[in-house]
Image 1: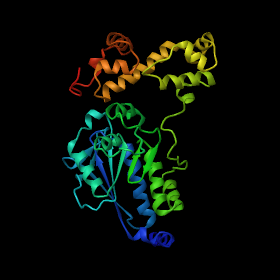
Image 2: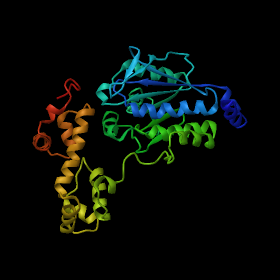
Image 3: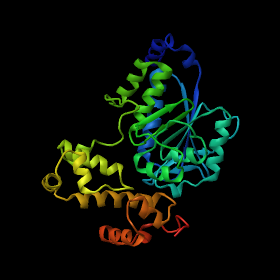
Image 4: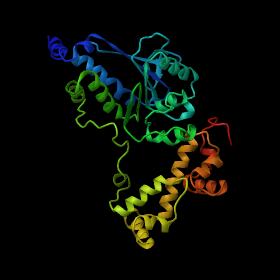
Length: 337
């Protein structure tokens, strides 16, 4: 009786939508994050419960086997990859880990075929990288998890991901992963069923603070660094934006309207560090991600992170991480030296 009452409450508002079931598929790449997947699937399941009937039909798919393995080692039952004429409304590809794990030709071919069939294609967390590899993001507005953004730009120089929680661009949907799919699904359910219904779904999961598409993926600079001086924050922001071509201390101080000595004092008092040490740490952390996630050679990574030579880069890297750049690169992940 309760289900019928809920259904009748919404049937006048969205009768056509409630009569039609949208097939939503999820292609799972081994090592995908369970949190990202659950954040996308659970709102759709709750929508079915609140509607009193299935308005979404959900399925998971893998290249081989009968389950997708999450990064935490939990298997998710799955069917083979969808083929032509499978009747899907939307198919998301969910990926985690690093791009070296995402070179799955069968998935790329599947995504291209689905796109040709008019299926809306989505990517969650690292999923947009596979969409890019399949050629589905040309001239599109899109996002990707911030950790994978630099690797995507290096692999596909013509593409520029936006730092947003999720992006809806017609028949292409991309999302940063983590809990961001909760916000994305709120938008998609609202688009189909209305904002009141979508709010009820979000309330089901205590998701009271629904973020907009353009909300940031990461905490603010002030929160990440634990500082609040506007001049220092300006310099830290510029540091993150100039990893490939670092600016010197004098130029940074001038940008923030500070003297070099005042800038030194701010780094010492608020961060317990120095301008040079923090800048080098940012660049080496970025280099570490590129070693794990991009096909760039070690020499190319050195120049992409502002080091004048491969030798200087290798010495700095070993001092910071206790091993050489070559040792940090995953065995067999990339062919170039």
